Image 1 (cartoon, rainbow, N blue to C red):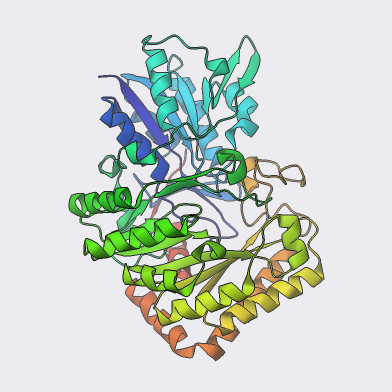
Image 2: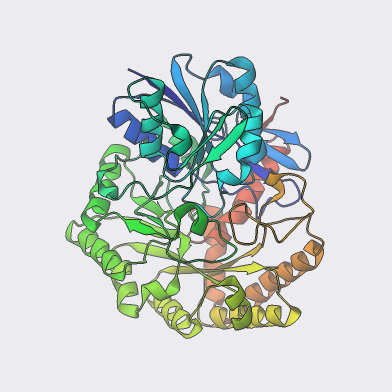
Length: 505
């Protein structure tokens, strides 16, 4: 049986911003790849650099790296592996990926190494933009887009089972005779129902559960992320997804989604599911049918739309009612800005009246709501920021449960990746880009927006505010804003040596 080693990098956070950076994401796309490879008789050796030792940490410049050292990672690599594939999980973790590559090339100079793009996350980056650096480090193959079919093809090639010119293959980057070749990826997988389930048994999921915080609000002792669709048809200019998915959206059928949920319930005893699709409700009929299937199968679960969805695709209050009946208790939407003119530059329409109506209805149906905004998009003015503040106030008055505010960074692969300068390394490209000349101004505005939100929530939803404090103490979070202070407290205690262990590389 051919062996392959799959590696996920460290969790990386900025020392001066433990609230916005350091969000815990389980490597969901890598878990799906592991499941698919195992189904096709490949032996998968998974090394989750963060998950294996989440309370171990080390310091490097302005960053904290949580998890295994590169030396510990290399010691866990199967020597029988035909391929070592490193998951480019997030942009802020880029330097962790670089460290791991260097260590692997030093210890296993004969091993083939591939980089896998995380095409299903807005926090990731287009690997084609970093191809030269990866090849210079000794990486043999760059794999963009969905990994399942491409990794199987690469393994068959390495096993001499097929003859193929990888310099011409869809989604592959390779260096031949000093020349870099890259072919843009298309969506090779037309029927997502044919894919295997995520192989979470190969990952240290108990370590994630023990943290009691995640990307989405962790309400119970166990949860699992799930992808019910891939891609997004929209073309927001700050986002990398239009590049990594070519503005295409595909989805699993409702019956396939519920069968997958039932499998995880039976196998892992999980009843809380975090939908990490970048836009799960593009097809309104499908989301309603998923709800119908959950209800008809009497699945007693809670599920959350953690990564955001476009509010217009929810369409109406009947969809909200159906989702609540099926166990949905958290929905994140992304207004981005309160300025219509700036939204034109962003290339994203937003229906504020629909959003207000649906948020009111979410409150009635006991679904917690989040609204995400971006600050500092190129061309944003003080007048635009005033309109953003006004929109946040209006949403909060109508029952919005929480907000998240991100300062724009030029993600490689986004339409604005050439609009900024001043950063020294890719890991600095996170949602608190301290290298920006206007960072101090934007940071102060972000703080003022959070203050405005909290004041309005205290005025219009005082009981909810009190209940949130109780949930914080119980570690049963229904919103991210309840969970983030707990994560920051845990991180602080870890860095002080009370809960964690500091190591040197």
